[in-house]
Image (cartoon, rainbow, N blue to C red; front, side, top):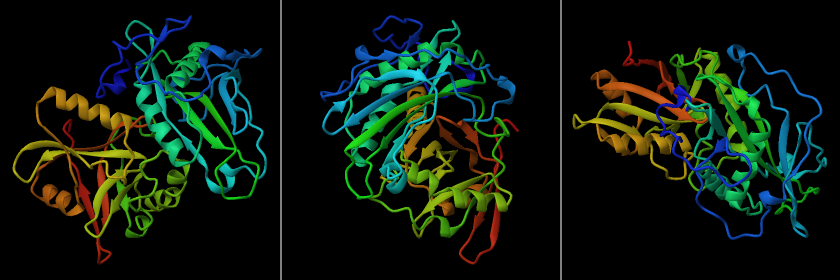
Length: 375
């Protein structure tokens, strides 16, 4: 397991999936009793040309892709078709494709690493499949067998095994994507869909590497669209595209990411595309790792879940899912009770916060500095 993901539990004891390749393993479990595609029907078309592998020291996140991709088509009349592994290439979509017009779309983010024995491991893929299935139901996209998709992804990684970086600071990012491809301008449940997976070797998500993020900026105007009962707890592109404007507002203020707040009391929810954690001495003087609860506002992150499970197993300090407000944070900073604040996610792994720029009700700006444990 790559050292950059030391916080989540290791996949070193995960059993190998059935199949001819035994050098890629994953954690398996849940199976779906739905009419689905089968990994046993996989059709593999190998590329006749191979791209040059990138320089791992200069990787820009998500810009380099492996030689092959996985595609699986679905229609309401014919159901799921055979899965295909084929040379990486462009997609052909109808101009009225429902994913492009009405955001009938979702995606996942997963990673594969090399362990100390050079064996390739998929990190907790069934958790991604469970979340993907939930998002698909919310988007009115067809159900699929989660274990079968994991096996198809495992086979794809096996085909492009040389694209898994041999490095402790890099990994292979896997991007399953699910599109409604209904060729109609009607706002309705799609009768056609495409599920595909692409692979990208990646290093650090941020250009600053593992250094603390230069700051977080939050303006009240950026949170008005965030409501309970929406789709914030689903991994859909619409949630990410809507955040880009605020992201560039943050850059204008000299900050790197956006700290998302909710409600009149300015509850802390997420930072950028990450779940948020606060390691502090709480109001009762207890050493505590706190993170906002899963109440429909935030994404149920795989890294978030792994951090909670691991730290609870340690038993070294209190671990709590609780609401945190900017007032709580400002008070704790003033009293010197904050030890660390960080974001977590598959792409970003664990990213510490260096500074917060906060806009109060009277539009005064408060620079809230954070002291890091390694300073």
